[in-house]
Picture 1 (cartoon, rainbow, N blue to C red):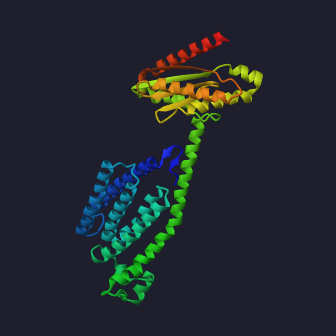
Picture 2 (tube, one colour; picture 1 turned 45 degrees about the vertical axis):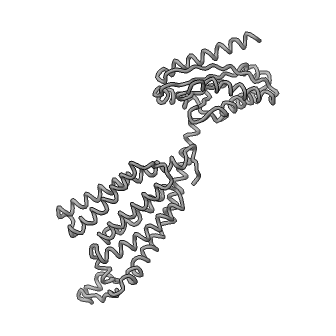
Picture 3 (cartoon, rainbow, N blue to C red; picture 1 turned 120 degrees about the vertical axis):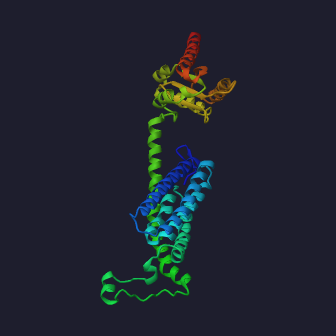
Length: 371
C-alpha cells in the first residue's frame, strides 16, 4: 500500500485499523462471555470445566491485548503484528478447547489482516493461522473437547454407519503416532482450504483500498479549488464554523489580486488565469500542517495560521514578498497583490478575519491611489 492516501499517512491508516481490530476483540470477548454463561445455564452441553478453562485463558489473552492497545502508540507499524498474533493465539486456545465448534474462527485473523491492505500482513496472518490450526488440532486431541471424527475419521454418510457398522468404526489413526496422522488428516487439509480464502480476501483488501481512494478523491473534489489546488470556499466556511473557533489563537492573512478585471479585459482570461495560478503557487510555498490556504473568490485568497508563534505572521508575509519578487523577475505580466493580516483569539476568528480583510482593503486603496 502507498505510504500516503489522499494526505493520510500510512501510520494514520494503521491507527484507525488497529482501533477497529481492538473493537472486534471487544465483541469477541463479549461473545465468549455469552457462550460461557449459556453453558453454565445448561443452554449448551459442553463440559463446564473444559469450557471455563479455555474461556479463562482466551479472556486473559484478549484483555491483555486490550490493555496493550490502550498503553501503546497505535500509530507504530509493528503494533498490527502484535494484535494479529494475540488474536490468533486466543483463537487457537478456543479451537483447542472447543474443537469442531470453533473451526470457523480460523478465518478471523485473515479477515482482520485484510483491513491493512498489505500482502505482507496477509501472509503473516496466514502463517500464524497455519500454526494455530496445528496447535488447536493437537491440543484438541490431547486436551480439548473430544472430536469423534478425529478418533474415528468418518468418511461416509451417516446412513452407512447406521446400517453397516452397528456404531463401530475402524479407527485409522495410529494412536502411537498422532503427531503424524493428525497433521496429515486435519492440519494439512484445513491449511489448504484456508489458502483458498486468500485470493478472495486479497480481492476484498484491494476493494477496500479502491473504495478508500475513491472516497478521498470525492472529498478532495468537494473541498479543493480546481484551478489552484487550494481549499475552496466551502471548506473555508466549514473550518470557520467548526474548527478555528476552538483554537487558542489564529492568524489570518488576506490576498487580493490588483487589476485582475483589467487584465482579463485587455489581455484575455488566459493571462488572468496565469496571474491566479502564479499567486496561488506562491501561497502554496507558505503552507504547512498548521497553515491552510483557501481560494474564497475569483481573485481572493486567505490563509489561517493555527496558534501562530511570536512573529510567525510577519515571517510568512516576508516570505510572501520575497517569493513574489522572485516570480516577478520571470513574468512578462505585472503581478500586483494587496495583502493584509491580523491575529487574535480563536473564538473571535470572524472578527480577526474582518480585521485582516480591512487591512488588505486599505493597502488596495493605497495601490489604486498611486495609479
